[in-house]
Structure formats: C-alpha cells, structure tokens
Image 1 (spheres, rainbow, N blue to C red):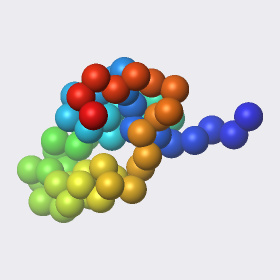
Image 2 (cartoon, one colour; image 1 turned 60 degrees about the vertical axis):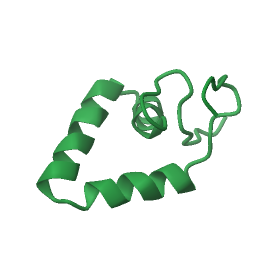
Image 3 (cartoon, rainbow, N blue to C red; image 1 turned 90 degrees about the vertical axis):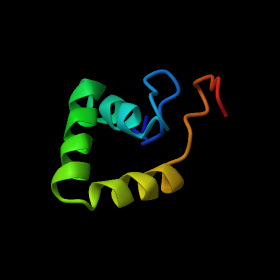
Length: 68
C-alpha cells in the first residue's frame, strides 16, 4: 500500500496540515507545529508555505471533518 500525504482530520488545529505531516512522517504533530511556528516567525516564508500546503494537500477521505 502506498503512503499518501493528506491533511489530518483527527490531529487538526487549524487546517490539519501539521497533523497530516506528523501522520505521514510518523512524528508527533506537536513537533511539526513547533517547527512551523519557528518558520513563520523566524524566516517569514513559513506562513506562505503553510497556506500553499493548505491549498495543495487534500483532506484525508478516511477522517471525519467537523468544521468543513
């Protein structure tokens, strides 16, 4: 079975991007979120990368989305 990158419906805070990356790489999503915050405030391009990922990465069809 191929591994696919999806936005998470279970590990979701804003759009599920960090939760989806955490599930894909089998890492705690909190670490991904921390890295995203550092990228947003440190380099400034992290915000645009998050928005692009939000648009490009599809929702996981196996997860139920409460706010969509």
